[in-house]
Image 1: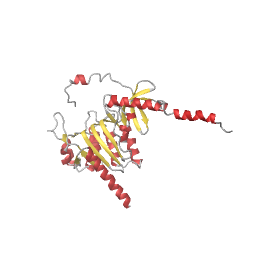
Image 2: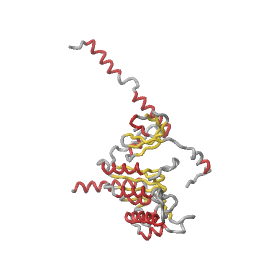
Image 3: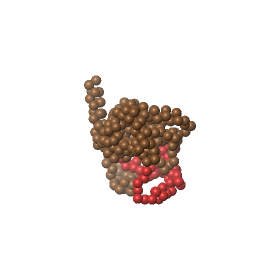
Image 4: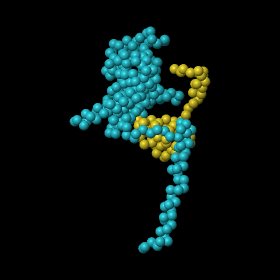
Length: 74
Length: 254
């Protein structure tokens, strides 16, 4: 349920065609969901970890561009 | 062979020069700092104590089970949560778990699986319902040793129906009924609510506009006995810390 002054059509615009390619990779004990920009770099979308300090790690902030390693493709 | 002083000298110079030019690491740090400004509007993010011993799992959006949901849904996947719970159980440095819920429900089997895992975890667990803990979020919220709900958070209890809550199996009325019984048994076993009261809330007809069921806000959930206490983040962390300390004292005594 959305409660917003924005028209619903505007909020949902493009949701049908929005199909990002996500990949799950591991950094230490955290699962990082990244959006690949090309085969070697990716943008962090989401961090999944039980360790609160992983969410505060500047290197793992969503939006950061990281390099993908060969091990990420296994 | 003895090295002549002439040979030694350039070596020292090389060592001194090493740290001065901008290394790969330094440039990486600068890049990280600019990215943090872009994404969060600040350069430094506060850090927690490395060994607070409390780990946290957030159950957000839809609970995703046997079927992958379309990408515009925010989901909590059980294949992410379950291995993390196993790791929490095994890691001696983790002393307690805080489960934060803001979920609209989802797969019954996946939700019950997560709830059972949290229930059987040997370490102290505290749950906190923020925003919403609807449908299958209810058994997850009560599965912790102690549960909190914020004043404005809501929990919706409604019957399990054919509306996509059970997926991938041809359902009969009996099957849905059985599924519902599993949820009801779990909730009544892990909270103070009676089965009679829970069923009454589930099949209430004068609460929701186009549906049967009940929406409970903050202290309503506490007064029916579903949740233990109304509170927020500080109360939840404090309670968990107390439970961890109690356990430590017991360990010392034995």
